[in-house]
Length: 134
Length: 134
DNA sequence: CCGCATCCGATTGGATACTG
DNA sequence: CAGTATCCAATCGGATGCGG
Image 1 (cartoon, rainbow over the protein chains, first blue to last red):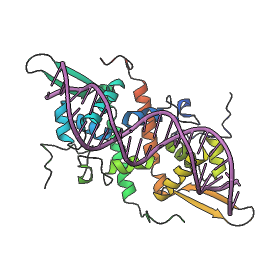
Image 2 (cartoon, chains in turn purple, orange, yellow, cyan):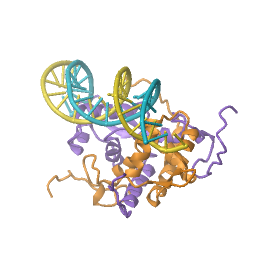
Image 3 (cartoon, helix red, strand yellow):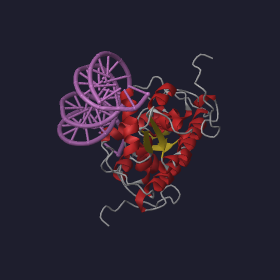
Image 4 (cartoon, chains in turn green, cyan, yellow, brown):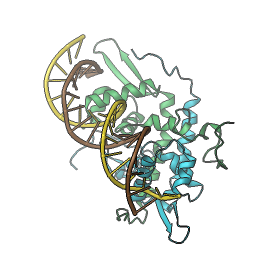
């Protein structure tokens, strides 16, 4: 019981268990784990593409023409290391490599849906959005 | 109709309307708007704190002791410019400044909840997670 | 108490060119 | 086709110290 966290009364649906009771960005915190999954520019777009089914490297490039090879490579590499995407290589001829979501990767779907919904909600807000901040 | 997007059949609950039919990270895309709201280290933690009610600058620092003044300042500034947080200053004595979520800011709650849930789901996955990618 | 100014190392992502 | 290798500018976040 070091780190007594002030008089925090934790909101049960915002922070349902101990794993979220942290006072700093902690890789073990579920929120950080989810953020890590979608982290990085282009990542949600790559995930969206793969939600439709397996794709090859060049199909991904074609779907996202402005995404550079390097960044695509990095995104795939990262998602693979997180076990969210898997690579399947057919060593025949013509040899073919495809990337697809793992079961864990599929579980990101509700999060993408919620991101979209949240964005729509924010958009419809009466916002003097770019007012000066004094 | 420039940019014909291959033979994309859009998944209706993943991309419910035209705003999400983009092939690059686009500030107008709802997903990007939601990501922008929670973007940056510590941001979700600051939002979590404010979900409980208004707090002063130093109360935020106390709740998140390892967050530096500078970064806290930047986070608050950004959230204010996005109209997600508002500043209220009482000019009496003692003068007091509090930060609280705007109605738009409150709308981030379901997203934080979904992030948490997603993180839990990912955690419970049988993952040979750090297997070599070779 | 509520911040701002400055400095700085690390990470990011894009451009370009090249390889198995 | 499926990537790698370099290089580089910009952004980020943490540390420290100062100011209203």
